[in-house]
Image (tube, rainbow, N blue to C red; front, side, top):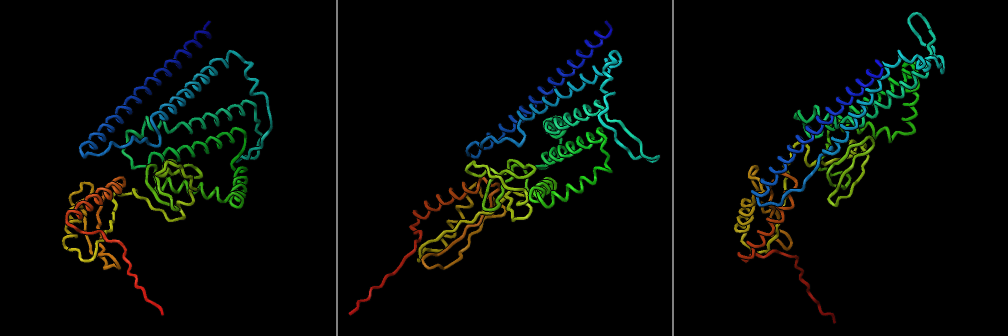
Length: 380
């Protein structure tokens, strides 16, 4: 009767802890949703004030649904582990037959100590404990980002990509730690394991050097952060936004919404253009060619006034107009200005070209085009 009462109490306690955890996750999820809704409302109001189109809703690398699912899986795993461990502590004294797992010896292992070499028995219980520890740690590693996001990262101001680097490195360390702990439970000493690791390292260096190079390059990217989740980059003729940084490769979504998989080694060894690494301000150059005989002073003023009147063009640094070349068929001008984000580049070019075309028509200034004089010679 006492055993049944204790079991009931354990089940009730674990269930209460689980339900409290679910309630906490629900509250945290609603807070995150409210914060994102406020940020989205601010974006919409800012776009309406500038008479722009409402920006497309973009999710971070770890969306709200993923955060909730991962935290829920981890909560279930913790609750199950707590229940199993509590029941085991309770019933092991009442059911001596469970000690048979300890008596089933699978093999003997020689362990080196300061006093000499002693023999250690590896039982079925040790193997089950080792497999359970490895399994639980792997589950925790793959669901850790959601819990870190809810507990720690959302309360800390971090630079873009830092939270992703923290969760990824933590996941790698947990997986490595789980296998080390599991190996020690099975009687594998590090003194014996290090020779296997050294041999494995040599084999990987020769046979899987590209895979190892990509893995190491991925670690360098996470620590050095030349590329972060959400950055706009150009590499190997591909321009797009970084959406994933994995062990072997990084995924870039280009402007056609195609996902391009690029090995991590390429980001470390090849030339890379990151349009938004430390400063999103970029320069735009518009070339304008007018016909010979045009008033160059008037053309310069029209181009300068058009740039100054466009709200997408930054006034610091101020836009500049240069009369660059006396071309074969054109008088060539260049307008150089800056915009504060990559999305304004094409829009600014479109609006300025539209305005220049309208102003040139009003002032009877011709946009030049290539001309060719053909001379015909009569032959006798």
